[in-house]
Length: 55
Image (cartoon, rainbow, N blue to C red; front, top):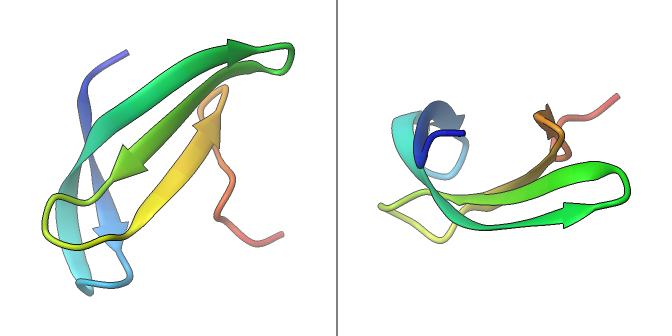
């Protein structure tokens, strides 16, 4: 998996290159924490699924 990814940041209200802050393996798969370099916004993905997205 890459160390950065393009993602819309709702705090900056623009596309940003998020960096991979941490990762670990869970029974559900790989958990990765992503953070915006320009603000404090961050989110988590588990097995590539964005957990901040609403259903």
